[in-house]
Length: 209
Figure 1 (cartoon, one colour):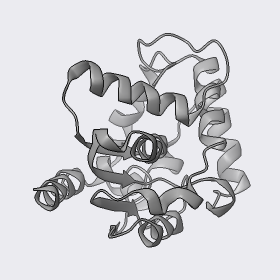
Figure 2 (tube, helix red, strand yellow):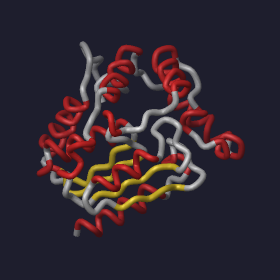
Figure 3 (cartoon, helix red, strand yellow):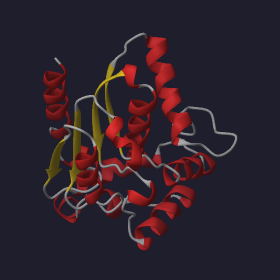
Figure 4 (tube, one colour):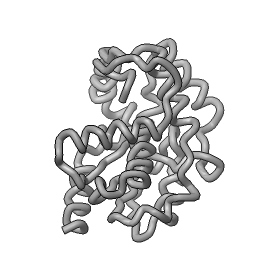
């Protein structure tokens, strides 16, 4: 996304619509569509908007640990929101927001490696804030019925950042969507259980065949 890694810093507020248009531009430039699209967290918000506004570019969809946002989305607790904002603006460890307590306790080396990679991210405070604002204004709940491509929904059972109930809601609103809840997992379930997403991608590919 703009403002992450080596991309340019946004000049002002961002929207999920703009970020979805960015993805559409990449798919068009590569001439590789329609694509199997996997979106995690805010990436899942972008993937929803991509499927809604550029449906011809999306062959199948995986929405991981994400929300429809708006009045129909379930927000994290105020404590979690405050911690997230602090981490984006000032930096700081986010292990409690990302990982299940069991992972933190039993796999400290995994958690430490993740935090090392986060610390190396060149994202600016302005870029982080712009992305938070984009996510905060995302709202697709009333439009989910328009997503008609094969869709897989997946989340950890104890996600603090995006409560798991949001994935249940998505699965009920998107026609034909399949729901997978990963036990003993947090928002970072793809790191905790790296076999989950590849398995769902394979299943989605078979559904799209």
